[in-house]
Length: 257
Ligand SMILES: C[S@@+](CC[C@H](N)C(=O)[O-])C[C@H]1O[C@@H](n2cnc3c(N)ncnc32)[C@H](O)[C@@H]1O
Image 1 (cartoon, rainbow, N blue to C red):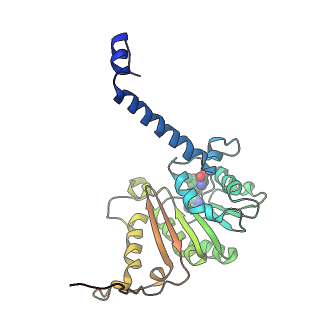
Image 2 (cartoon, rainbow, N blue to C red; image 1 turned 180 degrees about the horizontal axis):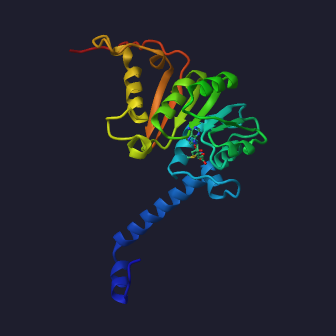
Image 3 (cartoon, rainbow, N blue to C red; image 1 turned 180 degrees about the vertical axis):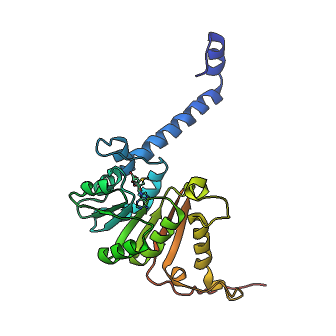
């Protein structure tokens, strides 16, 4: 806090910049309060007296932007990484009574968190056979939140096995991707195959329609089903499309030269 004496206060009062600055700060605080008030997930989190949730605060805007269209509908949300179970409860509250929430964790203690609308499955993301069996049993999933072990192979296993069962117009949201840069999670910069590096490969695949000069770039299932990738700090949200056709272009209007 700045210290005022009578002279500096008098000088400040005659300085309109002083008031402008104050008004701008107040505006910024108001906008922040408004954003929070408009985000039911953030509100739930701030008032949480249920099971524990641990989140990076900038995730809430991203969640709300991408998950809001699924609220109050009979959707399935699958979350890898249950921990204390608080986020499963948060998603149940946010999505409403028609939602089915499934959590997966390696820790057997999480099994006791099964309850109304919530099923918890115990298993390991390193185990592709377990994942494939679960995908087969679950049927289609509208929203997948990947917040499990954070090791690249676990993340890639989960993406490759569950992408086919994400519904058309559904989303695969993977978080805590800063771990791609942390050695203890097998991370690094550009060298090892982290999920961030893997995702860069998916950006290439999205553009494989244009790879006729490149023998190694051919359209595949990801070219035809990833409608968009939204890259945020530590989160990527993948939008699923039913069947993307080879893009076409056309011209309208007239040319004058
Ligand atoms: C970051 S916590 C999940 C936090 C929770 N989603 C939340 O927001 O409150 C990560 C969880 O992943 C689980 N986990 C770690 N390795 C795993 C693996 N190989 N397979 C499945 N779950 C794993 C841990 O037991 C832990 O509960």
